Image (cartoon, rainbow, N blue to C red):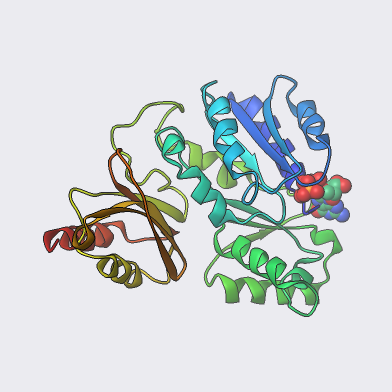
Length: 306
Ligand SMILES: Nc1nc2c(ncn2[C@@H]2O[C@H](COP(=O)(O)OP(=O)(O)OP(=O)(O)O)[C@@H](O)[C@H]2O)c(=O)[nH]1
């Protein structure tokens, strides 16, 4: 909400043009007309943009996101930049990107949070913002691979000290850059993450594991070779990986009941819904800096006893 995201995106698009990097853009504008798209077209008149209007991508627009990303990915760009609204939750977006149809086509490289330095302290205090806003602001700090605190021209030294303390509290050790008009080293903040040799998009991948592995938010796909012992065994497995594990979902067969379940796990709660599924079972885990090696080891044990 006015923190400087479109300002940054404009610069990214311009810079991509001079680097020969082809970007596509997915915009999400809450309750507004599609104004930012025209601003961005000024940076590159041939830019491919999909816009989702009147909704927050992480909530009611979820089902449309997969379609829009697939459409952009089919043009085989080097990368897709997704601009979220200020109220979007990065974790939910990672969740959306882990839909099976997207998992094989795109990989999350970097989450960049642009924070409004002038208002950040208000947005993160329960005395001045509602709980949902505080929660979202905290998540935007916690989940960012790059943290940009913008509008420094409007921030006093006293406020800056408090902002630094807030960031240290929510994400110890995180390095933030403090900017005016989002002027950052774009090589370091954006383009570096594209140069890992993984090449152009739309390449079908045989191995689905760790699709989102370059961001701090990691998605891991676990294979299910046979029925699992019990629901409780799966829930205990999730417990082992708290607090990093945020989300898990999949079709899980349970041996003790000879049934298939749609399993949804969010933070601490796990729900099980009995389903008839003919496709192969799978489980996707989403979390912050998950230790994949350990997870795979524990998962293998769970199978061994099933
Ligand atoms: N004073 C000041 N204004 C800025 C700065 N960065 C951006 N702005 C202005 O703030 C306004 C909002 O910037 P945008 O880049 O559109 O912000 P946004 O995050 O895309 O906004 P939404 O799309 O509404 O979420 C524009 O008028 C910008 O010119 C800054 O560092 N200082």
